[in-house]
Length: 625
Image (tube, rainbow, N blue to C red; front, side):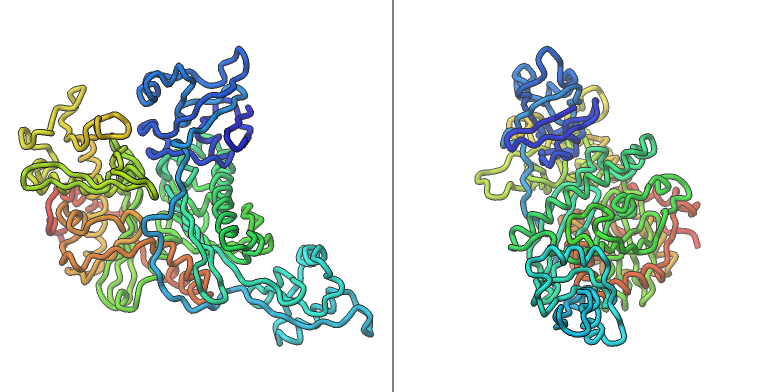
């Protein structure tokens, strides 16, 4: 079925029954989908412009969709892209308010100086003329000149490189050539004369978001950064959902790979244009992500990660040609994917560890990256031990009644003052004036709400609402417990009450218990009784308040000033591996040396998990010796 999006007239062919949200991503149309395509936020509104005459081009809207549309919207041809399925050719109009704002991230990276020693380099040589005796082909003359300059190493020139060079203006008359070398042994580009600069791109492929950094590899400088939602979210907000889709329909592996690569290509094209270069001038790339994301990027089935014994198909770092995965940079450039440590500890965790200073390794310090999985690395006098905890998607705002992604309109902080008034902090839309209207709770907002309600005595240590403790505490519709009203419908952008339910609190308890129980086993196994500091990595960790996570016992007790957010450490580590080849070797060594504790093999985990559900600060019941 042919789907066309206006304005811009972008067209894509999709199979019958495909969701409009997926069609939009495939067409390169970025629609708002704050809830991750789960039919909760009502932000992905499109309008049917010209359906096929006499035929219903889309599936009929049902009650849940109609309730999220503006009043009378279904009659006017408005639909939610996440809930409408394509049945025939259709033309759609995308209103401006439905377009996703690709704004700069709230804190995409940490500025750090990285000495450049890239895996790619330039070598400019003078070559013999075509009439010089003895007469030789151009390739032989270039190879001879390179051999004189390169010493013992004799860089190889492959036929595709010569083919690209032969299309350059005046290629056959230039008497100087600049070769771009990969690891000083292979020529990946030839340019007449002095040649262009050295540019690379580092990408952090998260389950929910993508970050790309365009870098100048000669001076070690960031030229630009772009962020976007991961379009694979159309197949589920967590990696387990996506693996399940692939298990049921193996062909979706190729589709998910194409979706994420197409979005990366769009981001790279924007970065290159803003920097005044071409995407084809980018000669090196590094990617990091969790094991599932790295498998999918390389076109490798991640399904074994979702069933016992949860082993990856591969763990080694990979270096493939960019064109192999469809990355539209210099086609002979390499894409380097950092190694994985286990089925749930991937290149993103290794990249984060790369960024830690010497004091981190010398002391007893914890690195915590909280997402759908919580990856925890303990440094204990130079020894690294890691554990992965199945915290669930609650920290991404998923499986929460009013949960949304950390995007404009999401509540990220909740306060209850001495008078009992509820106040909220909302992520603002860049360049838009006025107080933002909330659409729901993102992960940091959920944690902040639970911590604030616990401190105010509205939630007990067991996670149950205390009846009559607040005027905005009320019975939940349908008799499923109580809920706390955080923002009334008249203040919200969705015209619905934004609430925290008893089930939401339970989800927070389960996620935090999994993380805390994993940390406790990690500390006991390593003989560590007291931590020196805790580093919180990732976008989610960057926006957590240390007091909040201490108050509900998400991490072991330490002085609040010893908990610090370190930004997008995975993105930082990816750039380190891009700028300096030494860090790629470090990552490989870290992967070999890091010990992993598998919680599924620990019989004591379940009892400890139950004890960690309490919303209390301080130590948990100690494990038996």
